[in-house]
Length: 155
Image (cartoon, rainbow, N blue to C red; front, side, top):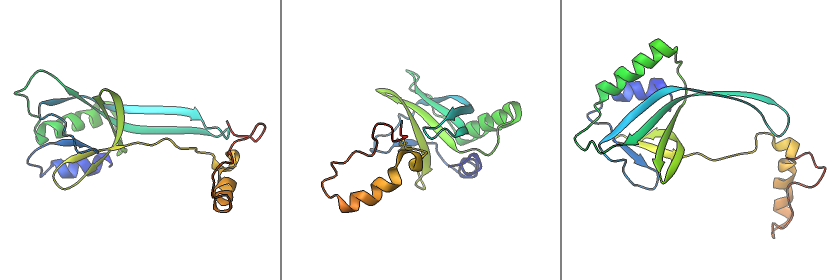
């Protein structure tokens, strides 16, 4: 979900509720402790330089059980971030601690904001031979062949 999408939803939302993908609700007394920009510059395993930028929301549970974040308040925090940080219309990543800090993609089901699990992936499939491996997998039903071999260019 992009920043423009959450703003559009919050403009008419009656409540701000978050739910983890497994169905567990984020307690109603959560706080949004941070709205910011996270940038990541890195080199993938194929040697390509990459740059990623996301809008980051951090959710936190406190012992403040009477606290309820209103849609207007979250819109105000977002507007402040846009003005002061120069935040663009970025994809949103949510940090939420359930055991350990997790990073989630954000979705909306018409009632609740949903924290969707993020997945790792190889960004240089061709350098790792993964495209070939996918083809071999159709001919190798046991799946015992490794996709990366010594000297194969995969990390």
